[in-house]
Length: 169
Image 1 (cartoon, one colour):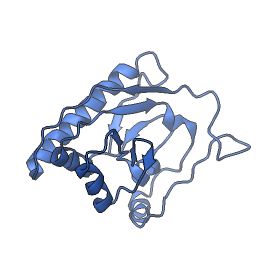
Image 2 (cartoon, rainbow, N blue to C red):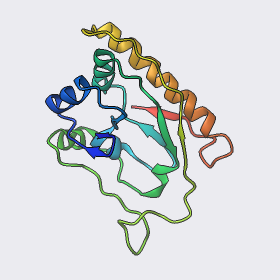
Image 3 (cartoon, rainbow, N blue to C red):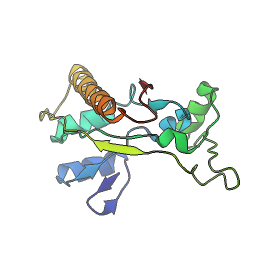
């Protein structure tokens, strides 16, 4: 989590304290280890279907959600695919199940010549709902995913990713 010029934990107690205090701006990256695990050149993927906690906190404390996306980022590194069950299990144990391979001679460096296009979409306004229900969270989670899809569709035009769909896992 990044807020202002500070970094912090995304643990429940830390996040709650920061949001109660109204720290702004606040940046959360919801994909985590799972998103790194599913990253694959030639595919644009986000791990969001089961990531609803950030929406619940946004509703509870009245934060808007701003979709951001970098097209081409997945092409910077190769990462073995498959074995999702055990890899997601390792991720849940805080062991990142990724094996990135970028530049041939120095594999931890990203590949050269990859076109990156980063965009920031308009804020998805969230109502203040102190005790959001599961239905509230699901509704606004869908709104966020739709906004991210819209941003992706605008960004991909004229890029190497123009023919790629955004895969929401």
